[in-house]
Each structure stands twice: as C-alpha cells, then as structure tokens.
Image 1 (cartoon, helix red, strand yellow):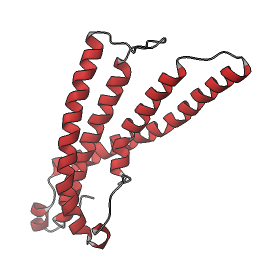
Image 2 (cartoon, rainbow, N blue to C red; image 1 turned 180 degrees about the vertical axis):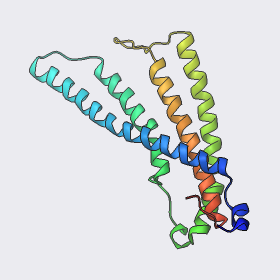
Image 3 (cartoon, rainbow, N blue to C red; image 1 turned 90 degrees about the horizontal axis):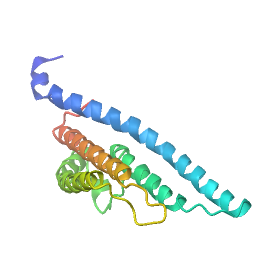
Image 4 (cartoon, rainbow, N blue to C red; image 1 turned 135 degrees about the vertical axis):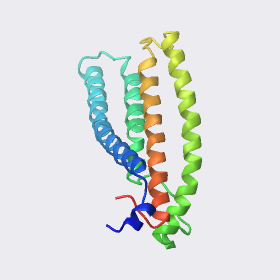
Length: 179
C-alpha cells in the first residue's frame, strides 16, 4: 500500500468504531427480529385463552405493546444500518454516490441531534421509573422500568448507528469509503 494513501484514509479508531457498532447492531437487530415470534405467540395464547377457555387475559395487551416497542426500538439501529428507512426521493436517485453521501452526512446530523435529545429524555424517564418504582395504571399494573430501559437502550443504539453512518457517509463523500 502506498504510504501517501494511508494518510488520506479514515483513521483507525473511526474504522474500528464503525466496524464494532455495525457488528453489535447487526446482532441485536437479528435478535430483535425474533421478538415478532414472541409477539405472535403471546397474541395466539390470548386468543386461545379467550375462545377455548372463556378466560380473558388482561395483561396480554400491555405485554404485546412492550414487546412491539422493544421490537422496533432494538431493531431501529439495524434498520438504519441497512438503509431500510423511508426516504423521500425527488432528486436523490439521480445523484452520484458521493453526492448522496455528502447530503446524507449533512442530514444525519439532525438525526443525531434528535436522538441525543430523545436519549436524554429516555434516560431521565428510566431513572424516574426505577427510583419511584413507577407502575402502569391498569389492573395488571406492571413495573415500567424494564420497558423504559429497553427503549432507552434502543435509542442509544440508534444514536451509535447514526454516528457510524455519519462516518461512513463522510468517508464516501471524500472518496475514501470505509471497507
């Protein structure tokens, strides 16, 4: 490898950050995919319980909401990594990969800011739920801290992935993509 090209490439700490964040979010995202089966089993249990045994299960609705929240928040970073989010395309498809990367590197800064604010709120809400043993106001009355912690972790993972995407887009815009 030419030594001069090494100085223009992406610094090693950034490459390592991108590699490990992408790997972690890929594994967590693959796990999150399985939560849809847990949700399906839970709803099937509720239906069978109600139809066959005439016994309604009052906790299933809330538990299914918790599982669905974990599903999309833990899978959000993986979705961001796969570029599977919705994008409004008026001009984007006509641009070169470097132009797309430059625009993406700029716009992801807004997402990083938003996720930072969301993470701060999630942290605060999780801390409150743990400190005051917050419960939901229903007949089941589950503790709320487990789902709030999972949601905060999901937001944090999306924040890490957005930063990784920023680094990758910036590298592509410079013409030196991260392998």
